[in-house]
Length: 256
Image 1 (cartoon, rainbow, N blue to C red):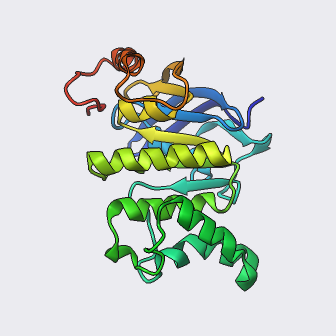
Image 2 (image 1 turned 90 degrees about the horizontal axis):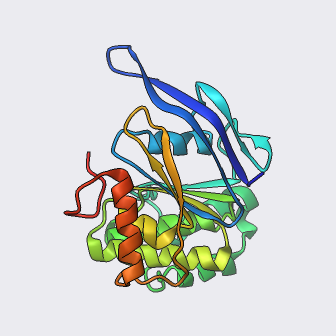
């Protein structure tokens, strides 16, 4: 069994009129240690709902989720979570944001050198004493990623962390995520609308259907690392995923 097991999970949510809506239908897959898995599908298919279940923020209507053979009941330090907008504390500096988890768990004697290492790794040197409003969105996301990965989680959940960034910055953050994944071998699950992003980063891609979200197919990525977005093989695999999603070729993103 893998590090994460999602077993026949179903989820229902209540709409504004009080009606029950089926959001996820019989989701079943495993994620192995050190693996990078991308989840892609149309808006509203339950991708973020699934991440919230894996994080322990919500509970499924039925089915079971386990990490390292332990049932997921609530959020804990075994899983890190990076949101689309980073959610940095505006009153704290970049360095203080990165170190906040260490301070909570280890007190004032936390490893300052470890914080400095991640500041260097994330390309934040020179910005560590700035506040979130003083840096770009890309820099803020680097800090949010560092804040999660520094806690050494077994599993890092990435909920469209590049979704609000421009194309150039998005590609830059993708490179940072790949570098961190290669260096730490942390297991990662990425929710994204961007097909190129899924192809560039992942070992496997979980393709989901429109709501209620079901797994249409789990596709193994055959491309070796490092990957070039300009290669013929990249383009061919990208089109293969796009065909499975049945989306137009105009922008490389899932519509809806």
